[in-house]
Length: 141
Image (cartoon, rainbow, N blue to C red):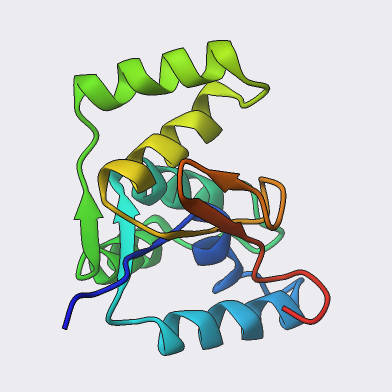
């Protein structure tokens, strides 16, 4: 039986620790629990998570707590970002309205063979080369 990989963007991981967004926190917890066997992340997601939770929260995590979380997330499948992925993201960002960083997430998800990208940063329901964009925090999501 093959796994349908589901790429998780940084914002989903961040909401796991966001005490100011209890509904999104609960949804992120449920999503990771439900999809635990088919989650794929990227190096970019791990780094963005660390920076966000240590600097941009009302109650930021300590660097030690954030590092422990990154270590825990590293148990999921982690897609490396190679120069080819960066170049593909540059091309995509130049040919679409995506920012470079969003394009890099898309390219990492595509390279990983993911069929779904969980994010609130892109248009829910959009398809990019077979990659379904799903906002897990939308109403009814």
